[in-house]
Image 1 (cartoon, rainbow, N blue to C red):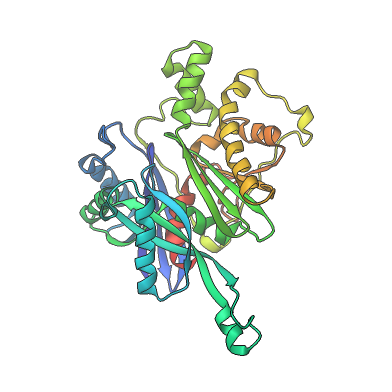
Image 2: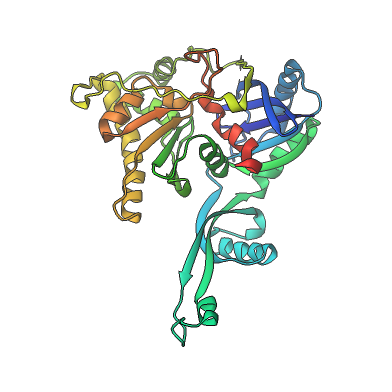
Length: 383
């Protein structure tokens, strides 16, 4: 029986999940969401370890954690994910091919990146042969199996800084997973179905991440700089009010207090992973023609809907007219009042918000959707 910590350091919040592994059953005991300070990241984006270490140390102490295995989920705009078609070969040869493919799309030296891959799907191709494939030997030679691999490349500097932080916290680093793969693991385990195409919208402080799934397979992901911070500036300009007033207004729309930028946000839960449930927060008006929203909010949310629409259109054109069946919202920004209803109205599509809740709770008070990348990173080995 071993203790584990799963963690993600976001732009605005650091999320920590604590639990115990009992013979392969992951029993989640507690979690925290910590508001980051302004000095957490240096101007160049580098993590300030001396700023965050004392905060995390005190949090782990409060959670009663001294020694534990640590699973990190890392994100940011600097990571790159690509799909590539490759031959089915032995692992060592596959790694060489993956590195070669990564070198073709990386912006600079591949040695500055950690490169990993996941087999997304098998592809079977039949090539013509001299004998037309009529003999058994001809048929055998005619079939060449290839795979579609999801190649992930993340800057070593980004990961090394967080590993150093984990070591200083005296935790045992067990695995590091990139954001996109963590999202893949979470949704494949709990939500994805062969018959449905799902788009995951993660609206965070610094930007928006959109991850598209074709059935149970990863399709594509894009990042946008349009996040809550950009919406705060947009609302300030549209209504000619100070940025601080605009910020406080949007925080209220997200159900957070004005002073949420300081101190710790404590959230606890006692929940078994296998009892996670999901709540669909449907639009108040099922008839989109009757949907009513404040004109200021409509103007504010239009860019979000536009970015979502670009990914939906990209999927349709690449998948021969197939449509997106559902949108799933995660992240703090997706708590903005009427955003879910607006996206449903704008795109005329089912929009759902993921919430992990305890079996005895009808509606969760906490925002569990922020923990999705953290849980996904923990699930990597079993997704």
